[in-house]
Image (cartoon, rainbow, N blue to C red; front, side, top):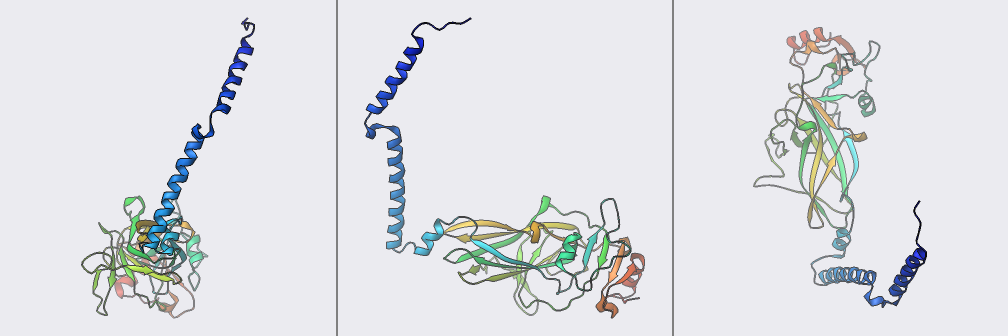
Length: 316
């Protein structure tokens, strides 16, 4: 059994007491904590002196000073609206294992809603249109310098089957859209400039433009995403793509990025038509096409024959 030597505990206690007395005897000016506080205060004072000098000399406005110390994204998302009135078909994908997308007794509502589509994981077909309303959080103007899609997984996949739901145009937006080519090698937004439909780059090129967000004003980005080429027909064939929207902007003298997704933090989704419409599980023809206040359920094989007979297909 280990024994402590007599007086060992008293020696250790005495050493600790002497060290404590030595610390107390050290002048406060020579203690490490004091010097650390002095350095921090000096750096802080220098920063504010430089900031005040920049304001006085006109380099920075008071608003820019406030922006420079603001945290978080400089852009606030006010609303993300799925524009279905412009007209594009919808696909309710088949369930895992090939199960029916919609039961035999289920029919899409006469007026499609984002809630109904989200609950069933519905996908836009051919074209996907969204209106994203934003505003600046900062006192000074914020400039959006680029908008582009970021592919989930870096690539698209094969177009799925399921229940195809026709959705004819019932109006549309008066906003000029930015077209995004989702499956291109270098997807870029483009801007439709004239009534002839001539498209040219918006954020890049010799005539590159920017979108300016000023304090107190809301701006809406009308985005039309297509597969294959800008403004492609809604019946275009193509893969199944999921993506988010990346926004590059300049605020407080620096370049920043933010990511935008669909409501519920879901990825935006778009698919092309299957090469053979008979491969869908079922097709619901639009009430406008059939002159009825509801959708008409048609077997996919019959719909494929109607497509070959006329375009758009006539309601049976």
